[in-house]
Length: 160
Image (cartoon, rainbow, N blue to C red; front, side, top):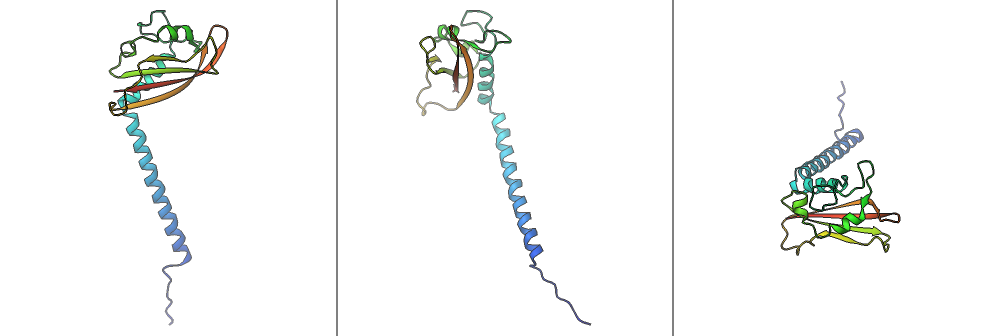
């Protein structure tokens, strides 16, 4: 009787080991990305920034800047009323949006037109050493500038 010897490090075993290691690395990478996503969803200031950005696009039911309404032309027309935004530049956004955080909204029309210019709602954030937590959000919107519609970027900064 002849005894046969097996090879432990055959080509099949090497390929299987490589596949196992790649699978393990992919699983660990996926787990950490899911965990960071879940942590960001639990971030209160991030949720507040999303809520405020959504409220900007609610229909403006009154011309009173202190009232808790948005800046859109209507419920079906989500274009922002540029005149109302300009009139509300000095409004206390913290009270308007009922939030414990400070807010700054910057509307930057592209391209800038005489009837549509850059508007900042709220105060600029203080220096970075004085801010505990800062969330910045950017949205794209259409502005109704009287004569026509203009695309604009809306930068929302929520900080404490």
